[in-house]
Image 1 (cartoon, rainbow, N blue to C red):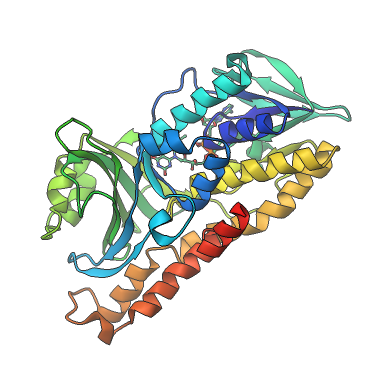
Image 2 (cartoon, rainbow, N blue to C red):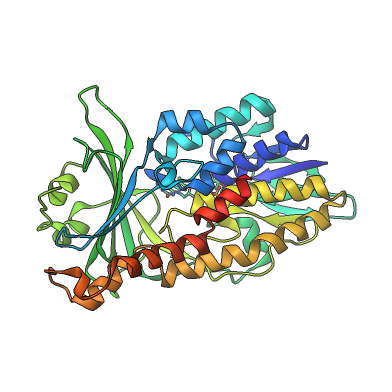
Amino acid sequence: MDVAIIGGGICGLSLALNLRQRGISARVYERAPEIKPLGVGITLLPHAMREFTALGLDDALLAAGIENRESCFFNRFGQLIYKEPRGKFAGYQTPEVGIHRGRLHLILYETARAKLGSDAVLLDHDATSIEQDEAGVTVSFNKRESVRADLAVACDGINSAIRKRFYPQDRLAFAGINTWRGVTRRKPILGGRTYMRVGSILTGKMVIYPIVDNVDAEGNQLINWMAEIKRDSFAQNDWNKPGNLADLFPLYQNWRFDWLDVAQMIRDADQILEYPMVDKDPIDTWTFGRVTLAGDAAHPMYPRGSNGAAQAAIDARTLADMLREHSDPRAALKAYEAARAAPAAKVVRTNREYPPDFINIKVEELVGDKPFDDLDKYISQDELRALSENYKRIAGFALADVASRNG
Ligand SMILES: Cc1cc2nc3c(=O)[nH]c(=O)nc-3n(C[C@H](O)[C@H](O)[C@H](O)COP(=O)(O)OP(=O)(O)OC[C@H]3O[C@@H](n4cnc5c(N)ncnc54)[C@H](O)[C@@H]3O)c2cc1C
C-alpha cells in the first residue's frame, strides 16, 4: 500500500511516522517551500503525549518544551478560583507539555525525514485536486507533475482545498471572537510550571503558559499568552498576521495582580500575532472511496482546551491502525471514519459551548463581574472539579481513558 499525504503539518507528519512504524509506505506533499517555525505556543495534553511517546518523540518534546505541573483558573481580578495538578503530577503516565508550535513542527519534520527518507517529505507541493479510479488516486499539484498512490489523506488544515472539493459550500464559522497570541520573555510566573486561565470570554480572557525555559541564560522563560475578545462588531482576524497592540490592550491595561502584571507582560511582548476563533460545523462523512480527511481538515475546532494537536495525533494513529488491519484501503478509511468522526464532533461542539474555561464563566455568572469574598458561598471546589473532569472526559483525556489506552 502506498499513501499520499497532503499537508506536512502536525497531522500529516504524525501520520507518516505512524505508517512507517507499521511498515506502510507513504509520501508527504507540503505546500510551503520551506518549514519555518511558525505559530506560538501549543499544549500537548497527556493523550497527545501518549501518541507522540508511541512514536519515540517524548524525550525530544520534553527537552524542547516545559512540563506543566498544575492548571489554575483565576477571575479577572486575579483571584484564584480553582487549581488542579496536571500530567504526571495528576497520576498520568505521560506528561502535559507546553511547547512552541514551531519546535514541535520541526521535531516532527526532522524525524519524518530521518525515518522515511528526505525524498518522502516533499516541500513546495501545492495540491489542487485528487481524482480516483478503481486502482488508485491521482493527486494534482500547482506547477508540478501529478502523482499516483493507492489512497490519499487530506491533512491540509482548516482551509483544506481537498475538503472544499467534496463540500463546495464549506464555510468557516466565526461568532465574533478574535484572538491575539504573543510571546514575552520574563521571570517565571507562579513557579514556572503553571498553565493559567484568567477571566472569561464575557469580560476578557487570557490564557498564559511558559513554553521555553531559561531562554536567555538569565533565568527568564518564554511565556506564551493568548487574549480572547468577543465583540459583535469584530471583523474576522487573519491567520498569523502581526497583531496590533491597540486592538487588545485597552481591555487588559488594568490587569495588575500581586502574582502577575498582565498589562506589562502584554506590552513587553517580542511578537504578537492575530488569529480568528473559528471552526466548522461537524461533518459525518470524511471518507470518499480512496480519499479521506484528517486533523483540522476533518474537524477544525476552536483552539480552546489544547485539543487541535491531540485530536490530529489520534486521527493519525487510528488511521494507521486501520490501514494495517484492512487489506482494502476503502474499508480501512471507512473504519477510521467510523472510529473518529463522532468523538471529534463532540469535541468541536463542546469547545463552542462548554470549553475548559467554562469554570470561569460559571463563577462570573454566580458572583457577577466583581471580586468575591468567599467563593464557597457560590460554588464548591467539588463542583468546579466536576466541570473540569467533564471536559477531560469528552476530549478523551480523563485519567482512566488515557491509562486504558496505554494499557
Ligand atoms: C502556520 C500555523 C501556525 C499555527 N500556530 C498555532 C499556534 O500557535 N498554536 C496552536 O495551538 N495552534 C496553531 N496552529 C494550529 C495547529 O497546528 C493545528 O490546529 C493542529 O496541530 C492540527 O494540525 P493539522 O496538521 O491538521 O493542520 P496544520 O498544522 O494547520 O497543517 C496543515 C498543513 O497543510 C499544508 N497545506 C495546506 N494546504 C495545502 C495544499 N493545498 N497542499 C499541500 N499542503 C497544504 C499547510 O501548509 C500546513 O503545513 C497553527 C497552524 C499553522 C498552519
